[in-house]
Amino acid sequence: MTGTFWRTELPTAWGRFTALFASRGLARLWFPGAAPARFGTAESSSPPADFPRADPARWKAQTEAALTRALRGAPPETLPPLDWPLGGTPFQVSVWRALLRIPPGRPTTYGALAARLGRPGAARAVGGACGANPVPVLIPCHRVLAAGGGLGGFSAGREWKRRLLAVEAATDWPDCP
Image (cartoon, rainbow, N blue to C red; front, top):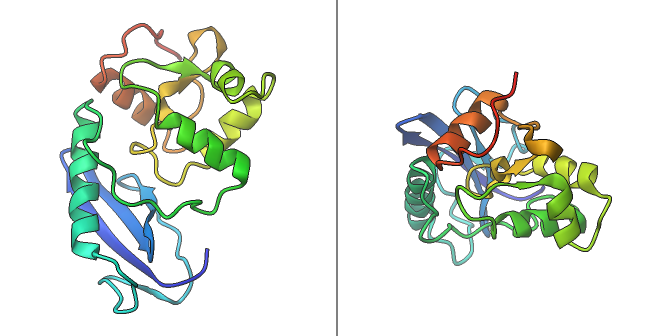
């Protein structure tokens, strides 16, 4: 990604998330305790003046509201503008868009999601796209499980995935070691 970026912290009951906004919207979201990557020298802690037609204060408020709802297990009423394609390949973006259609508390599997995308047999590629998700929680990759109901991986760690699924009352997945 190139351009000008604005980084800000989002306090939640689960800790401080870090958000990175680009000129078209939210570009990255990091979990509390994660070491956010830098995106070049054009990054500031306040909204840049050259964000065209942007409303950074509104974007931050929308992101905080959506994140707060998601951490309570409810779907966000609205998402902040997202800076699509968020650095992803066309396949990754198709997976991320499909993730937005998975309702809270209704997990699916990597294979089932691959089949829904018309790519049966691409479960590993779907898993890779989930792992590359730049806006976890809001783009709910935690709702995708391994075949047979196993938890599968998660970019922020399996404990975060367990917590997110538990808060969504997704109780029909087994505990995993």
